[in-house]
Length: 425
Ligand code: HAM
View (cartoon, rainbow, N blue to C red):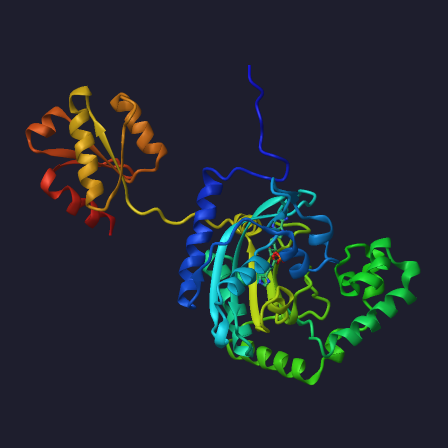
């Protein structure tokens, strides 16, 4: 017997309900995002490693510990994308999308890869839905991005009260360097009480210490100096304008001066949507922010940008925890059954005719008995079964069975489509 294999650790096959859930998330994203003027972009699942090391930052966990990096047969260092913002920016620079101050609104859905310890809501191959607004510098762009994210979650069916929208400003090149130094100094002064990762962060990435889950570190960081208190005038003005627009829209948010996010490219506005139930420690459904320096980090011209990404697995878990249906309404489903072998060809022909009229129709392709065709129709959750039998054929029609009420009646072939579509309304 040949060896049986299972999917690699931290990956999952999407089939049945989980495939339907992913379709639902993608379809809903397309529906919401296109109303905001977003268009699809598809970039490679792997990029030159430097796109991520330069884009995301050498000192981040993602680049330092989590990337799937390999050398291809030509000796190039390539990396499976751990996120897609850097890839989208690389593509936009390559295609000159934002030359002459043009703006581009792009969205994507697809797998990302991070070598993390798998747990509920955390996988090594996971699926993201993301949007990137390139060449947009106003507070209105930030507010629109946050509002689109919120609208997406509510459209899926997540209860507003179950979610928390956190907002912060990461400052910019004017105010952040001095603050970074101040924070590094604070960490050094308190390093006796900190874990070894946070001690190291004083030299590499002091802001990441705010994200440490270690209780002792959390206690120390509670009294750390905050960037919110030392923002430069431009960053403060921008932040105030964003919050004003959110207030005007009636969107409730919490200012969280300790929200730092895990990637180094952020400037100014950052945000995250979290939930309290159903996800345990991995409670961030999605997040993002402004990244005004990334184009330059990847060799492009200065281009202000803002975006977000949503974790599909976590979003599905949150929806399930609220008892929501995680699948699109598939619409009317019809099953055409042949009463005996003599009617199989007629049943097949009728199936094809109904499909050509735009209906979703199944029929038996395994020569099953009438009884097991009914079972199949039931399993497929067909709304109606059309029975093609000898007597019906002589009378020029079929028996229409309503699978919910179990009612049956004769309908002529000429009126089948009309009957089915009007019954459904
Ligand atoms: P991120 O916060 O690293 O941001 O990831 C976004 C979302 O992806 C997270 O909130 C989470 O729901 C999901 N996620 C991350 N890692 C995993 C994992 N290992 N397993 C399951 N889900 C996961 C970004 O990726 C940025 N590119 C977002 C962005 C776009 N910022 C600006 N534009």
